Length: 515
Image 1 (cartoon, rainbow, N blue to C red):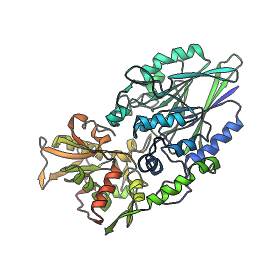
Image 2: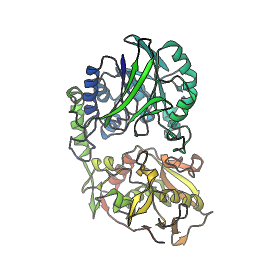
Image 3: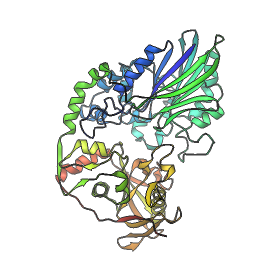
């Protein structure tokens, strides 16, 4: 027989085929498209198990609208849409906690798929978000399935949203449960909302220890027959240590399929992995029907004007804006500094879909340019730490054939545009001709060179402030204040107090190549 494991992951509330930049509904992703693909596969194959690997609750304007504008006790319309897909299992992602434990638990209760979560326990050692694993009869064989969540959740999620919870290492948990599962079943599947900390050659690709543990898990824990992963938004269809592994990007752009060939003795004789793009699948009408009324309300809400602009806060090219500072990034920096009372600010253009603000500025502009639910943190650092952080950002660029391009570690194995920061409150030159670690020159604060021991107040998004994105020079001990609002709310609040924005650009940094 053939057992087919079907997978979506990191849908992030993108139920309909749009990136919300405009009202167009023809984007090459969405749960609606993935649902059509999954249903076709479920119909085609006799034996299937269908998984969603987490991060389904948060990430899109629609999911924000349900949680923060409608203020539902659970995302009823989102859950109704997922319930049309006939998933067997659901895994808890790190972003499931963004709106609090109660919201997540209520969502789990009204979801038809069975949630599994082995490595999050409460103060009594219970598993509040699903059984650690389950054994399911699939045709003539018994299949054991375990769910895991990245323990990196504790590094950036608000502590109040994780109150009373303990996150245990995925490797430690797999060592505990896989032998038990092996005794009870013919096939053992691990679905992990986490990714890979090393490449196939064993070379480390991560700095934050414990966030992704897939490599170590497969190296140390024998008896896993397939590993389904997520969290990193990577595109993977491979084998590692002989085990089929898969990861399907994000926003429903791909459906993953792991096929296990099983003989009459209930032994796996072969395995295949493949990824199916959903762009050519039409939206599933049942999912569309479940979400359509809310989608119309979201569209109307996003189009509300908040402020007007003197000048321009839009730009045509995000890659170009990272080299030649744009008005938009200066505006974001000013909002961050004004909100937190900082001397210096660091900010990113997170994706190449970023385009700045149109005139008038709407909620749509805000939520499609600032795509992460970051809060802001004010940290006290010194000049040495600032320069170390800026040198880390300077690794982003390389120079080839007379052009600045993005260096390979920021492109492969996945784009890391959000790991390149631009700085406000200081003036500096980034010379890509110089060796890594020595690229930041002419660094001044208020016209004077920054001293290594000089105390500085810097505003960062909290993910960065705790070291996220390969910035180990930042840590929690430096944080003196954190905002209570996520950044899109911060921007909207600022615009209410400043209904006319003057676009400015002090051109405080330059990216050059000069030997």
